[in-house]
Image (cartoon, rainbow, N blue to C red; front, side):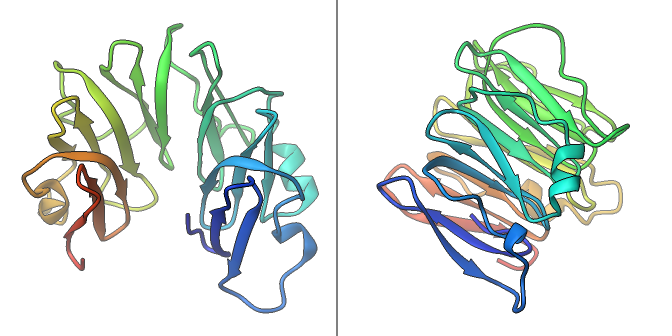
Length: 219
């Protein structure tokens, strides 16, 4: 997982490996010690789900982390930007947090399996695998039928794009393409996939056989 400050990897024992992108960093830019099971990295702010399920964030000053108003755990999966985040609890409920006037209000009560957060919107998979998106500048064209097993969003900069993997392994992508900038991002390769990750200019997917395929404006 890579963010603006550096790249993070979780070892088998749950501890983090860190490769900083910058020199002369402060202590609070590093993750708190301990064991983690998932990392969500933003441009400056990163957060992780600890082995206990609690969420810890770093990359900005302790005061700024406090202003995020992080809810107490446990969580099983989270997604964050530099301003807000959302997470799914073990019972499938969804909770969101963030700086004042920035937090994304979660959708109506329900159960969810995965969430992905952008700067102004978020998308999640509900208990039956349907795609649910909310917020501002939500990418248009989300699938209205089918069961999906994974998704991600590109919400840091225009064009706003989202992709999801159906239970058949097929990739579906949608978003704002009014100026044609998103066209390469909206045309994923054929085949079966098990995971997908979206970036500003290109996206990559993990195929069922373990191969990685990328597409976009500069893959």
